[in-house]
Length: 84
Image (cartoon, rainbow, N blue to C red):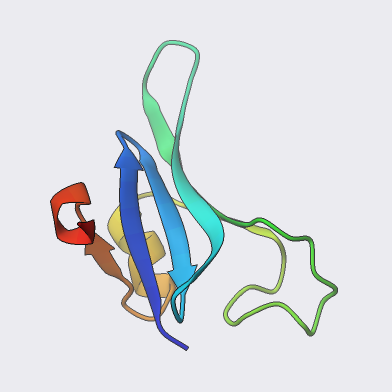
């Protein structure tokens, strides 16, 4: 399975698996605006065992975007200009 992250807006990426958007990766911030981390989330709450790897639950949290991309098997992070 090949994931890529497609930049939407500051702190927001589409999570694409084999050409289909299956979720998102978003920056989480505190009320004061400090970055708390990043969350990779599937759009569909699929039953355990049918979720795409490496998801064992619908949401996973990470300290950095790079850590999320690494967990997703080295997902490529694409800028909006690269998406065009």
